[in-house]
Length: 468
Ligand code: FAD
Image (cartoon, rainbow, N blue to C red; front, side):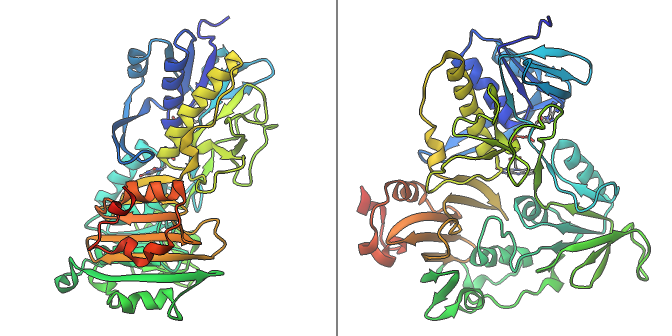
């Protein structure tokens, strides 16, 4: 017997693990909970600000592990690495040799960055505080870096980093493709090239209505891409005047430390477009791989992305074994306007929901799935703008057949509504639009909006009056 033996064990001190532990402390305060984490700090969610019923903005803070026990006496935290799970005998083994028993276990081991190459000191993956610290210390002496990837992390780096030349390598035709469409990318591009074109600012440039059918986006017959540039009066990008150079539609196919030209650099990246770029280091921000390969988990059903498959109760293919956050891959009949994305919000929601599921499972109680899985929501900041993504914000699941309503005021806001059969399916709200609540309600209640037409985004009409 180990005096750590407990009803619930959680592996991982990220947002999913910590919110699961907090949830269990609240729902089953009489039961012992042990959270085992390899990191010396735990992640806590703070400054929670509800923006609407489903949408919350919050900060993520790293805290000393003792704070969790101070706040929740039924929770103990063990700073150790779990090396094996034996679900048949209901025990876990840690690197330091501890064997701890459980009745229910939740895997919240997160995910690791996919690196374009392993074992190069000049290729950095950004994941946790340590890698951010490593990045920060390296950047101080760097003259030129290559950033590869087109998601939130790459976008943030490109926005935040100053005083260094950045070559941004993306496989798409436009920046920040994971979160935004070419139109919004164009909106951000302004920031990227830091133009001083004040004449166009602060007025509604265009309200437009596009129809998308089978993947083709048309506005009066013209394709979205090039049409966007002309209709918004955005001229060609003059990257030469800025410190960021974007290499579109290409990937890194190799790295080498052998000197390739007259300039001497620690590492050279070879791109699919034939260019060889020397730099101080490469930041690899090309997505993550779930940490699902612990000893003893070989038999668990996994998804194509390597995540542990979970059902609508976040239960894995084995009894008493649950998973939440980045490590899991959802495997239930998803609600129409929700899908999985490995983000803080979902780690928080899944962690809390796993707690409910584990506590109910212990007591043999039935429960309904949490409402948060009805609507995809995400709040973030890109290039200093508040970005709210709701529902099928990029036309996901709509098989390329939908309408787009658009309003943009340069340097102020970018609003995109996705409609199908007159009903709102998703929204991208950039800037202080104050439309979150209305969009959320319209997606959830599926009101037929056909009669409102483009007035939905008419800045002179307070659309909310329609629906009050
Ligand atoms: P993690 O936070 O990865 O936690 C996993 C935990 O498990 C860690 O404590 C780890 O030490 C522990 N662990 C792993 N294996 C073991 C083991 N064998 N034994 C013991 N402990 C173990 N999302 C957003 O929504 N907004 C953002 O702005 C945003 N920015 C990001 C920036 C960066 C640089 C990165 C890398 C990600 C970002 N994300 C963002 C994504 C977000 O961080 C993740 O979706 C979220 O943190 C996942 O939480 P988690 O608890 O599932 O996993």
